[in-house]
Image (cartoon, rainbow, N blue to C red; front, side):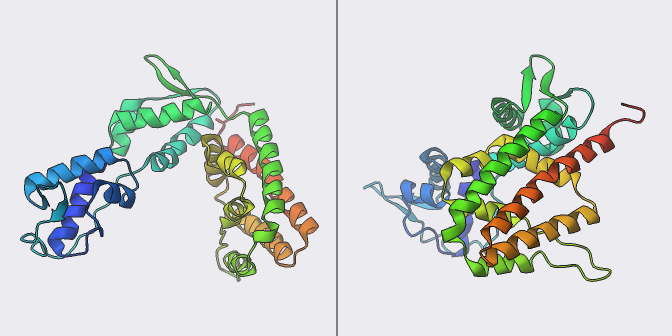
Length: 292
């Protein structure tokens, strides 16, 4: 669904159901509420004026049509359209699977658009962002080329991640909250006999956010980091690996709660480095039988 249509449907539903619309029916207030630019808001408002749901007064002010308020039944939840970040998370899975083979794989816009029920322009825009990050190459008349996972590239990323996360931990020290840490510790419990291990992965994002360093945050928001994060999630589904990762998180969290910074850095460093062998195991599992 296009953003302007979503805004029109959501706003119309609020008015017709009698639910409170935004405090001010102005383009700026609506743009702030829906976290977008004025263009889709203006298109949505014009559509609702045409339908008589919103009235535009001679002085230019907007107001909900009093004759329409509460006349449309109960309010319904209107699903918001996916954002570029949503599509990054969805299509990075396609890149991850394609990168595990021994040879380059071409992703086709038409096939992906059909699979995910969206227009080709959304697929093209997302893959263009990936190309800008060096994850894929665009090849005319062939599609978007995904190269096999490179062990040197993977090791280089893990080395950079280790440096930046350790720096994030150092910067985050004065901003850490013991209650937050204890809650994360509870969410990475020691599994009881017969119980599946649980892994709560918020620790990394928490340290990065609490570091207060925008450059570190930007690194982990970009598409290369998204790729390796998705790759690790894909590579480590086994219960034994989940249990081990959760145990490593517990060691880091306990050290942070005790303010044993040296032990916390050592545990975090080991935790990050162990992900390299896990990714290589995924590569070996994906290799066809008989391959070297």
